[in-house]
Length: 103
Image (cartoon, rainbow, N blue to C red; front, side):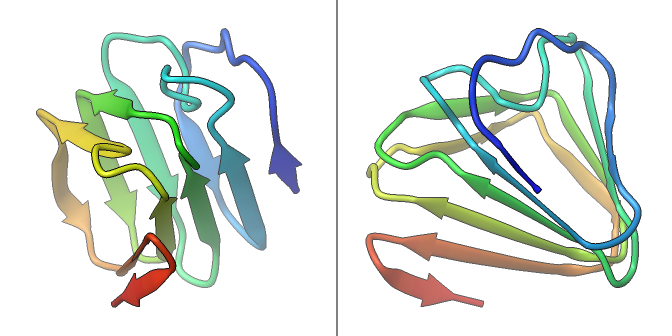
């Protein structure tokens, strides 16, 4: 599933199976508008976040689970993880920037 468009949801995001790709439509976080953003990606599941040419700050992001998170951007400041907590995440994080993939 791929989500495009504005997101006014303020709850957490859980990916329990399969792949959820989210394309940021603007410079705002596509993961919701709450003060704390909870993201859980289970083992075997994948969350893809692509900010394209937008500069998106993910504020107060709390990440947990053991799945895979793919981050992508074409902007030098496209992914900003501000006050994020990844202490409960034991999965794989991959980053793609300007066509180069770092794992």
